[in-house]
Amino acid sequence: MDDVERMYRHLVRTIKSTSPQLLTQPFQVADLYATILPYRLHRRDLGLETNQDYEMAMLELLSGSRGYLVVDDRMREVLGATLKTSNPDPQLIREFASSRVSLAPEALRAMDPDALPAPPTATAPTAPTGVPAAEAGRAQLRTAAAGAAPPARDTAAIAPPVSSAPRSTGTSASAPPAASRRPSRPITIAPTGETCPHCKGELPAGRQINFCPHCGQDLTVQHCPACGSELEHGWKFCVTCGRAVAGS
Image (cartoon, rainbow, N blue to C red; front, side, top):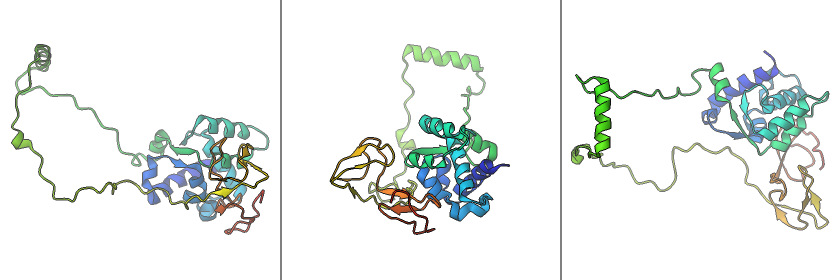
């Protein structure tokens, strides 16, 4: 078992125990390495000695090359291309922080057959007792062709019971909670102008913005290149591990 397979298996176990709804729902790439499976909390279980080993395993996992995750075509293309070079760049993962991925059902069932509910089995209609199946089928076709109305039913007998539960106020109690993230706070672009750190496009000078108008990336947050912790815009060092933040 190599680092990538070990990371995938530990990811499935972690999601099952902490956020089982994510077994069938997509989640953001940033949530994967910063909240669900951060290196600082899982390095012992992952069996990885350094953060560089962690980033390389995460890079291959997110490239979709193993079939463990369902990823979009651009992420597959960009991350797959850097993996083929002599010096892969794991920092490319940050460019897809807001992209969404999900666990591939086939790989999940192969690892843990009980992780997902079994697909429903279609049940063939049965003919009334004493009537051959073929004859029953022909009778149904004749009835449909003649436009015969179905027999009346006793609506009183099948009326659903009146529920005593209070009416819904518009909030679904069964909806899974969203991943906890701090509220976005706009950043102010300098009057002299700045460029987007993701696509290098020109940002509107003097404006308060949350997202890049060219690539749509969230500009209000950044992540520590060492441990993946979420950092405030403009911080020079990580508050978790003390690593200097590039570009600050």
